[in-house]
Length: 282
Image (tube, rainbow, N blue to C red; front, side, top):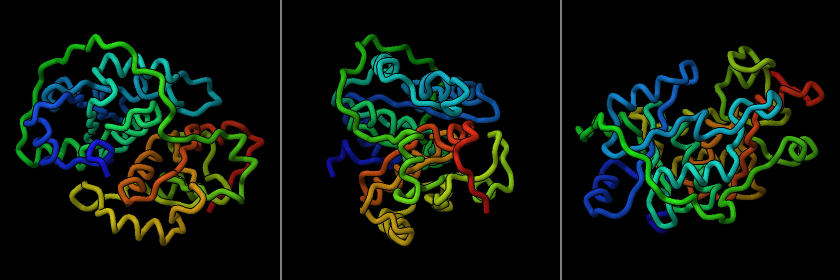
């Protein structure tokens, strides 16, 4: 695989790329669902030198209507403008990271691929791995770039909407990235209804990680996904609570060499907002 198209870079690989002086954009995507300002405050105190801050709700999500989920996709034109302000242009390598196990970095990675940008990766292990390596951090603010919006390109990743998924229940493999207790409907701290989409299979996104916070080796992930029946046949549909942690499973599958997965962006928060849609528990 072309290095620019690899979904993960190690800290050592990022250091090597930075030393080469090639054009690069770093995105700090750190976020806390319980405190929407926490990631931005942490970024102001310490971030990878030169990193821009990408806010989940302002930059990596669109306008909520109450029926389209908690983190709907941004409008492509708005994302293209923001990408230009970050200095992203075709051919420029982007590396995304966060401090929470990489779900928010994976969301940024997925969005940029969806925008048509191939040269984007996630820093494996995120900010904790960078710190553990003794790498430098900065508190210096980073000015916005003056590039035009990212050019219009074909989407690199596919999506499915709620109506299509509803019509295909029982025919599509659906993978839910939430914790088991939320999937089973035992608790629901964020959405109005507990449970899951009928027929969905559970793959908690944190199961993609090793104890040190880095992704499991590609061959391990491939074996685990193949054991679930996600072996590159019909493209599985990934979802979660709001379309964020599902991107972590999409990233893990790409890392494992299992390509072609589809995102249901609205995920459970959109699905359960319509009482006519079926709900399963257990």
